[in-house]
Length: 150
Image (cartoon, rainbow, N blue to C red; front, top):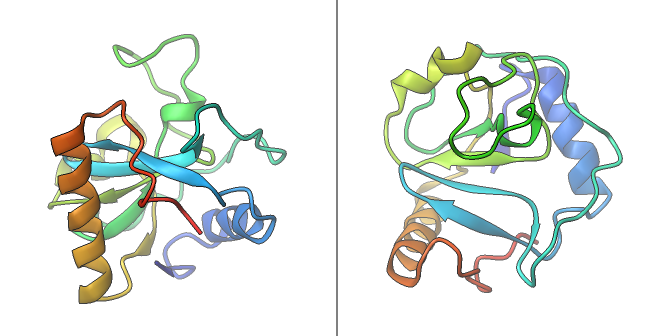
């Protein structure tokens, strides 16, 4: 991934701290539908604690197009799971996703999903597509250990 501090400087700084501390090491992509999503979910099960808490700003300026990387609101939803009716628009956390297609609706839904990076090149996008294919053929709840964040 190539960070985009021109779009989201505070978000890039936040994610960079998590990366520098090695908190994503051993974590996996666990979702694939119109995005592939990752965060502090371990490939072996369980989660890594985030010592930085929530990201309290939504720098939603970029477009959620194919290959863009955005902060998910998943880990900052108050009191609900996958069937939420309310997300907190001005927060995020350690969860992020890579858009598999043009998802313009994410530019404004729930206050917009902040694009902070992009897939670095065509070879990297081929890896993203392979992760999507592996997740869809093996099931959403089965970690794909080769798709581990390093």
